[in-house]
Image 1 (cartoon, rainbow, N blue to C red):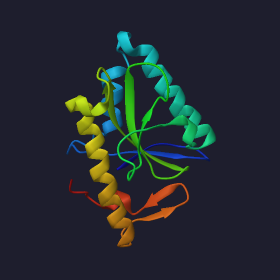
Image 2 (cartoon, one colour; image 1 turned 180 degrees about the vertical axis):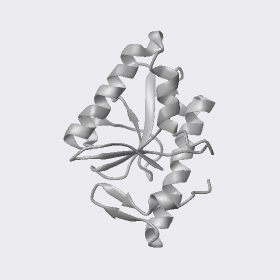
Image 3 (cartoon, rainbow, N blue to C red; image 1 turned 30 degrees about the vertical axis):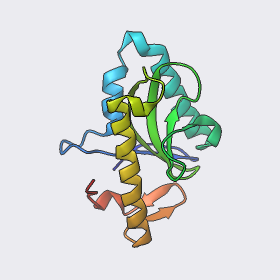
Image 4 (tube, rainbow, N blue to C red; image 1 turned 120 degrees about the horizontal axis):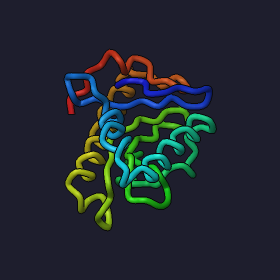
Length: 153
């Protein structure tokens, strides 16, 4: 897990499943940053991330996704086809996943988007287990000890 950005209010992390160290958020950026068709959606997501860094990870910045029992959310909350999935650990800690174009009624109908949400759900379960065991601690804006653990998903 890597820190993507940090402010006085919030820390944005992203997870990496690849041995090359490329995070899921970096994959999202490389796919959509220069994509003319979805540029306005991409810019809306980046603006939302900046607002989260400036104001904290307030509920109004996220669209609930996943199950009632998890913390998977999507950005942006309104408009556009592009979605970025993330875990809202607290108002100070967000873990960014990957995302894509939502062209179906819900993410479950799209295998790619469904996979991104499942990855975050599995990761959250393992993260919670490591917090309960004391391997990782939550210190206001940081997950202490998370950089030393390889999560098997």
